[in-house]
Image (cartoon, rainbow, N blue to C red):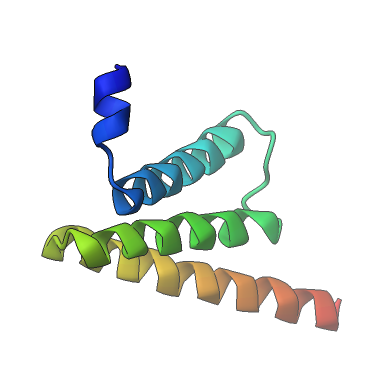
Length: 89
């Protein structure tokens, strides 16, 4: 295990962190620790997607980059919608 960890590049480690953040946000939503209507949900997903995008910029994969692009756009829309709802409510 130590050999594997020492062989990781910084972009790989950052991408793994992004993956863990997104997976934990999804898990927290499923366990009802985090509500998908809360601002935190799209913010956390945006952070994870940005970290993954950084990793993909060093080790490019078109399908994964497309997925992260959609994830980023959807997260930004969710943040904007949440902020708009807060202002009007």
